[in-house]
Length: 196
Image (cartoon, rainbow, N blue to C red; front, side):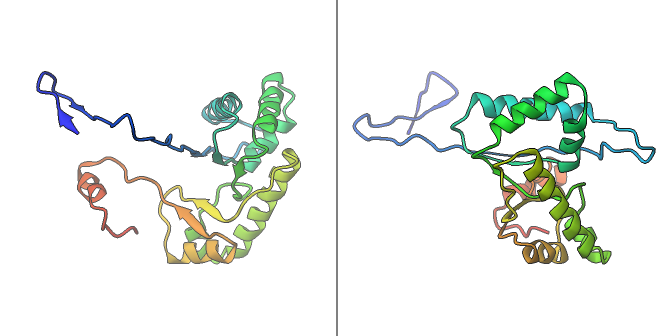
């Protein structure tokens, strides 16, 4: 590596006689949504969630060979599948075409925090909603097998939440990145920091 004195950037040199393998890239993403089913029986689909799902389906269809791991909200998908709106039906067809062969993660039918569930004595409810979410994903997308071995953490997770996830088959947990704040920038730069 050398610095080009005519520019303020760094230029990296590479010996052309050395074979360099391409970098492998995989997509790991989670679509979040509040429950679409309302207490009065109406259905309200978050436009952001619909947009995120549409963009995800387009990206997966456009890049069929890129490995992807996705976490999708089962309750929202079930509501979209039951919708009479042509755009919702088209979105569900696109997802049905894009998901086979991809890793689809298990998650509860409606969003439920594992740590809160464990501390509140709701582990059985979490387990029931996780099974309901898996059943919903299998019914909506034949050929897709929801995977419990990986869990994408949305916020904080503690020992009780991790134990609940482990008891349900999670072998790996992906933590969110540290938010960019004045207090967290220093902690984010420290690779030895304790994750809470």
